[in-house]
Length: 375
Length: 161
Image (cartoon, rainbow over all chains, first blue to last red; front, side, top):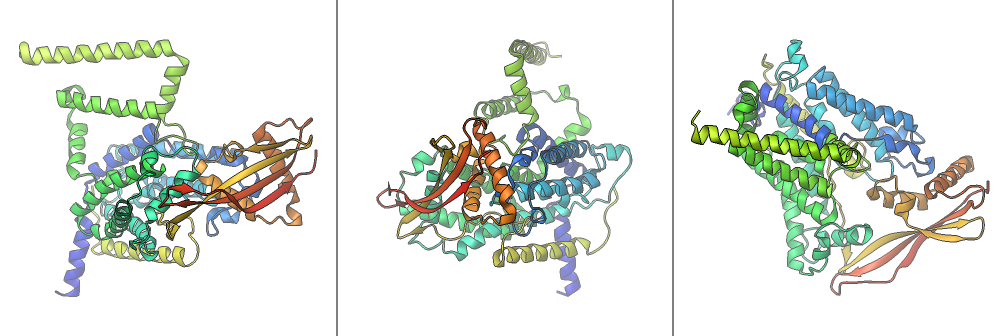
């Protein structure tokens, strides 16, 4: 095979491996923004401004290292406000390319100060995603830019670059584990780190009190092996999209189990993984957005899905977990909940009752029309 | 939508980006993790030696001008910092050398402490803060935790207002 042919082949693979068309990618843009705004919460840096200079300890190689102290609280409030505006502009697709770049830069700037307490958190995938997709054309559809006829050339192959980034990031977690001997059966690293966490945090994670009782070396060593193999092979999986999607599915469980063990959930990574849902998911959303009204799409499957979503919402509210803390602005969902429950309980109750009656009536009428009266 | 027709652009970007990812990762291993850096936590070295794990803990004592001494939880003092940043902050304070030019920083720290603990500046001022770092050892076979031993300590003295 000639070099040119090989290059062509790999080039085609990069273009098509994780292909989504402009519409599907634009739907992802909407999901990324709306889930951040409504569920997870927009990153918040306003709490950073009121700390004494003596505790300022930025990473040696970072933007914050150019400073001697935290900037003022007002500065961080402005930065947080700018992020809110950027997320809203990106949701509606106005100046998508510029806003995508700006959003990532602002988050990187804010995070470099947030990590000036001697620890770097690793939500980098969520932060860099808008920058990686800025030139992809993810604002070409369902956007104000599309109404303004401001289209970018379609570069949906940038999704493959995102896949490479995700795979590589996981790989970087596996390499130090492998090099430091996590596969040595005479030591159980996962158990060791779990014990360290268990005794050093105020509130142990949900299943931690159960796990602390497990002393089986086989159990803990198998977790060491699973972690190393899973993280190292994530990079290899990039080259086989089907396998990569399976690894994404495993990653959801991986983060979830970690969260249950040591309270580290990596929730923001979930939004990046969303990009790798099967294309059929985006196709059906696209069909829905292009053809249908809400009422045309009512059926009992949708109702079932709505109930499941309702349950998720319920658990989200009840446990307020794992979302929402100091480092995130309260999401709209949370604000609404606080507003309705604490400020105007009566109004909320009425609203809920009326909504329930409305939906119930609608379902009954639809059912009777379809099954009994046949019209 | 117009398709991007540039023949090898995706391949070139894919390779260049892959190269960039590798270089920044090697840099983070050889020197120190920069920010930003595309990597996820690797944890690193094995925490257990002969089935024993060292666990670190911190202790704060506040000395007031009226002679009172109060032990406070670090979560209380640093309640406006996410809990997972607190150990890093405590370690930083323990190692922090204060030059003569930075005396004002100590005073600012004292004022900040008072605001965190709602002490009344007129009557009962914070005179001193003592930070201690402890170590205890968890025996993975026996499932027992040893008594604490002091690893390091540091005292911050504040000028009385």
